[in-house]
Amino acid sequence: MSGIVDTSGWDLEDTGARRHGRPSDTGPGFLAAPFARRTWGESLQLILNLPVGAVSFSVVVTMMTAGIGTLITFLGLPVLAATLACSRGFGAMERSRAARLLQLDVTGPAPLRGGRPGLMGWVSASFKDGAGWRAALYSVLMLPFGVLSFTVTVTLWAVALPCASYPLWQWVFPTYVHRPGIELYENDNVTHYLSSVPEIAGCCALGVVLLFVTPQILRGLANVQRATVRGLLSR
Image (cartoon, rainbow, N blue to C red; front, side, top):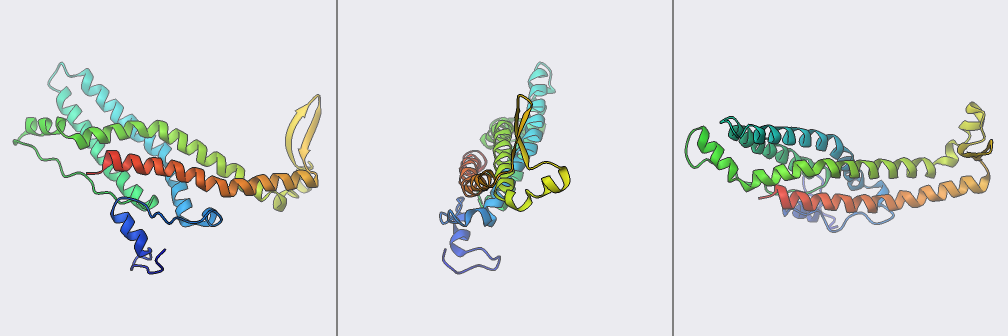
């Protein structure tokens, strides 16, 4: 970190990295990662991938299928061209989201320009538009990646945070639920609860370990998305 910030509050080294389409190489350290704004920005990005991916996948695949299905008529070509234009719109939205949450600024493709005026000129230019096809591919890939990133992010935080803080709220069970702790399993009508001091300490230790490991795992997923944005949505 340079220690010098710009008017928006970003470190100048970070700002320069963002302008060149890459995040800062000097991210938060291992011990600071769970409390860093960058970690929670990446977490939000990975969680939002699922609803964004579901919408973009549904729209692009539905329109693409409709266009291919009506290619025998004149209507199919404009529908496919509109699909690519819509994909470009999704791409612009994703570049904006990556800039905000992943601290990644990439230059978008040049606006689509038709070689000749009229509908067919626009359709022809759309079919030759590599940026539109790449954005369509990105929109399709977002659904499986969104399922993965959402599941991993929510699962890790949902385990790490409650386990790390379990000693602070374990008393709720005997006080209000009339159980000694979290139910671990039931076998032969014998129920085992997470209630002894060693078990509570072990649960807390597991949570603390996950609390520091989770940001590193999520950083890897975020870097995959950064690479995808750079590869498919940039100029």
